[in-house]
Image (tube, rainbow, N blue to C red; front, top):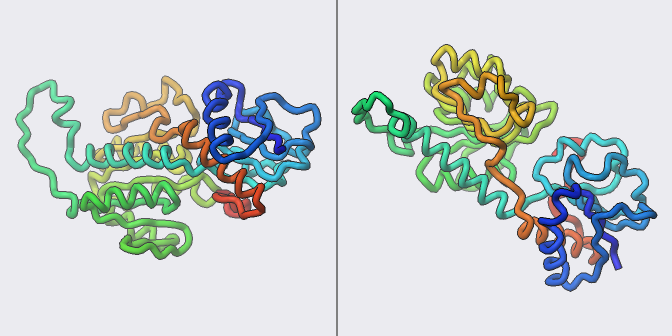
Length: 311
C-alpha cells in the first residue's frame, strides 16, 4: 500500500483531503494519505508538494518515486539540490480554463478600448470604433500548455496570434517565432503581448528596455506568467512617456505587491492579485492520482520537469 505524504502545507489540507481521497477511490488505489510527516521519511512513496509547504530537504525521502507539484510553476523547487526524485509539475485542466478566460478577457478589454467607457467621469462621447480582431496582431510569449491554450482561444476569435519560444516549435495552424531574432521581429508588430513563460535565467527580464522599445506605439502588455519576465523600471518609463498603451499585470517580483509600489497608482497599469489561474483541488487531485496510477503501473510520469531547462 503506497504512502502518500501531503507536504503542500497544512492550510491546503482541508481543501485537498476529500478530493484526493475521492480520486484515489475512483482510481481503485488503496493508499495511506497523510498530512503528517512520517516518522520514517524513507517509507514515503509519493510527495504532494507546493512551495512554502512542509519540506525544504528532500534527501531523507529516499524511497519516494515522485514529487508531485501542485503548481504549474516550479522555479521555487527545481533548483533545490536535495531534490533527486522525479518532479512533475501541475497541468490542471481547470487551471488552464481559468487562464484562458483571464487572458481572453483582458486582451478583449484592451482590443475594444473598454476602459474609456467604463471610467468616463467627464461623459465624453467617444464614438471611435476599434479595429476588428484580424487587424490586431497578438504575440504569445511562451508556448507551453497555458500559452498554447490561450493562443488557440484568441486565434479562434480572429486575432492573428504568433507564438514565441526559445527553441523552434512547429504548431499546426499557428505561426511561431523562436530565438532572439524571432523575438525582435515579433515585438516590432505586436499590438498586444501576452507573457506565459516560466521564470528561468533565460527568460528573466525578457521584456527589458531594449525590447520594450521595439513595440509599436500604443501596444498593451498582459502578464499572467511571472513577475520577473518584465523589467519594472523600463516598463514604467515606457508607460510614463505615453509610448505604451497599458499593462495588465497579475504577477510581480514581490507578492503581495507592496502598497507603495508605483504600479498601484499608475493610470496605465492594472494590478490583479495573482488570480489569473488557480489550481482547483478537485481537478488537480485527479491529475495527481493519474500520475500515481502510472507510477504504480510502471508507466512514465506525465508532465515531468526537465531540470536542465528549469521547467
